[in-house]
Length: 195
Image 1 (cartoon, rainbow, N blue to C red):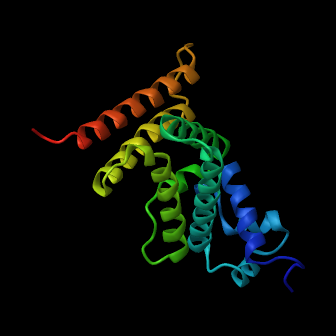
Image 2: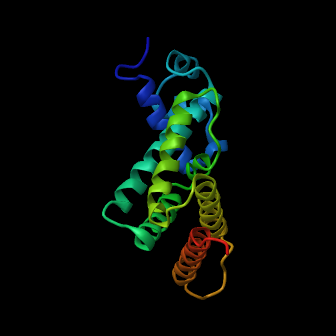
């Protein structure tokens, strides 16, 4: 008999918490069942299996990150919007070390929810770059460059790659300032007619 109140949403919610504690590779149906106080086979009433559950956690993580970034960038424009987005991105990634890697993966083409949340994340980042007035191809390039820049720093930071005593926050702020300056230069060059 299924545990009262246990449904797909509750299972995914518990999986989300487990992934942040243990990492995506640490999530198993047996572990999740134990955390929920049920036997592993009963989870199949709510999810199709471990891969499906991990995909659901990825979608939920992208949704939460997009919401977090939207809130952080409201009321900001130009360089301030990019800086607010970058700071919120880093904070969320550090607060959710297990789920963060699931947000940087391209969506599964056959998963409508994953595609929708990935597109939403894209729109949030594009919104922060709106003041640059980039053409579509240039916008994609700018978003890729910004994501790579932030992800590289965050990846090194969360892996313990910054052992020097210098202020890591200062280094991050300088990285973001450099990224903004580069994006602004690129936008200015694209807007200047060749002559």
